[in-house]
Length: 304
Image (cartoon, rainbow, N blue to C red; front, side, top):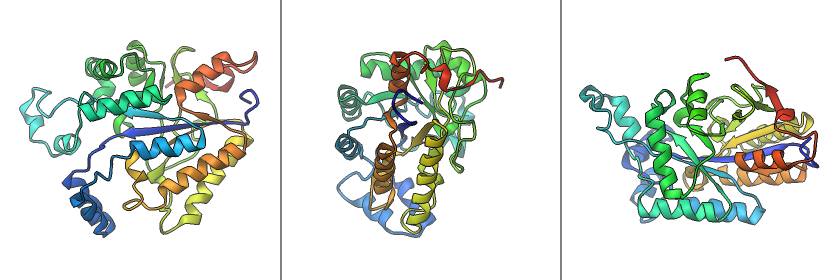
């Protein structure tokens, strides 16, 4: 148990593409056979810019979350011409954003000032490239004005334990990459994982929203998954970490996900959960009463 809370719910958002681009509109139009994705692309508003909506929703519920920002290198940063013409390279770079851009930088600082956690979303190749991750971290910290404490790798792309060793060497306290975009559940037990030492923590990803049954066509099935996970976390006094990408708060293109996120938080509040971003949970465990420590929630130091 975490003090007087029955379990912990950690809320996270990966900021992949805050600006909708044509290739995304076309992809979702073809995949879902819905013209709403193209219509919203040609509308005046930016349907993927959901920061204010998320902040308002969470503020209304009295909770905070973590936003992980990308600081990707440009297309020609590798210096290898063959990379410039590879389709997978173009897919990764299309729609990239610059965290030093005035609008993005302003949101980053607003989140930080408002009590939300701003963390690092390491780019596609950074999990095995310490210099690239070092540069991305420094760039985000220049905008933020202080150090970041953790984050998650883009596309959940990492190797174990190498990526964690790189993150720890760069001074990060935690990572939340370990998980799946297609499956959900407490695959790595119910606590935090200490793969290196007591000073570095892994928050396994319990649920990514896109792994759920479609809440528009199968609302009860989607809700049942969330309710079952909350019940399991409570029964086992666990740490449940969820990821909702900001674009999924756009109700026109992704109906049902915003409401489901709210219901998940409300159910967890009713169940007596501690709710917040991962870094805040680490602080809470450090400050908690004797017997409730980081290690008491850990699954143990694992061999990877």
